[in-house]
Amino acid sequence: MAVFDWKKLSTADRVIAVAALIALISLFLPWYGYSSSFGGASVSGFSTSYGWLGALLVVAAGVYLVLLRSGANMPKTSIGPAVIVLGASAIGTIIVAIRWLTLPSGSGGAGGFSYSYGARIGIIIALVAAIVQVVFSFRLFKASGEALPWAK
Image (cartoon, rainbow, N blue to C red):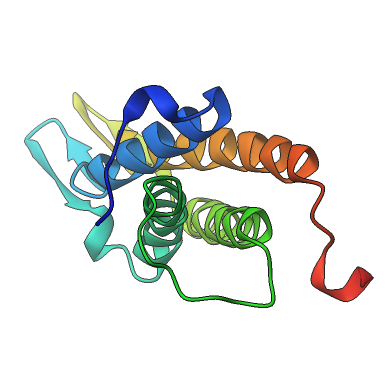
């Protein structure tokens, strides 16, 4: 049976886990929206096409690491756990970044009327959490001494 003890996690493990939690929370925040003098609307991360997939990969990387460190019975793979965490984090970050870059944005107005549309706080939080997770996943990978699958 897996026993979770926060104190037994390294600093890198903790940052990766917290980044995963922040990415999960960001999925419920506005990722894209429209606002004008008369009101506005927004959609969460789950409604912005493929962007949610990247955030879920970041979440999955953190969950996998916490389960692994908790002693859960994880399936054996030919790829080391640090490579799995780094790969999921990096791919997730790339997907979120592409979604952010491809969101249309603009603003305008005339005669007392103004409007704007574009990325909102949720996708920015998700992207920052994902980048932080990649940095600490890379540190974890370097400290583990594992080899990349194609470098064996």
